[in-house]
Length: 205
Image 1: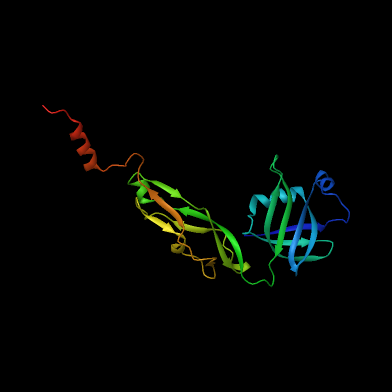
Image 2: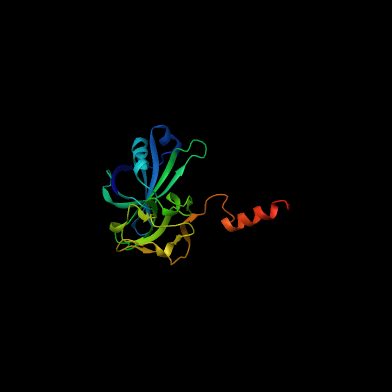
């Protein structure tokens, strides 16, 4: 997913509280020129629209700074939100041009209806919902789809078993559990065990 966001350079000497009262959200751009950063402001309504579609470390954003001028592809690296209201009060962007492969966080989408759930009464247990991957900016996937259709009770998938798109690799090889199908609740004993317990508890005639 790619988006375009327009912003302006933050006026020197401006106060962040005053900017927010006037409907502007402070932001910073990093990575466009070595360690140099640019202080920016973005209209609060633009930020609201952006955050409905963009994800941190996942969505490519074409950032356009009208009064420098500068335009280029960036990743949204951080969103700081007010602890009480939850409203964003600062954003950080990272320019991706010339930086080669980069680490991104990609959500996992579980598709299909597992056999172990549909036919065996088990429960699908999703342990993680995103993965850290290495790829070029143009190869960032919106999500990784994981088909759980063939999973039976007791089956599981681990990070290193997930099929990734071409040009995308794991940050580090991992045997971390991703998803499994748990037995039905209350099925701690087998049918034979249950029968044995019933016989043991029956009175002798």
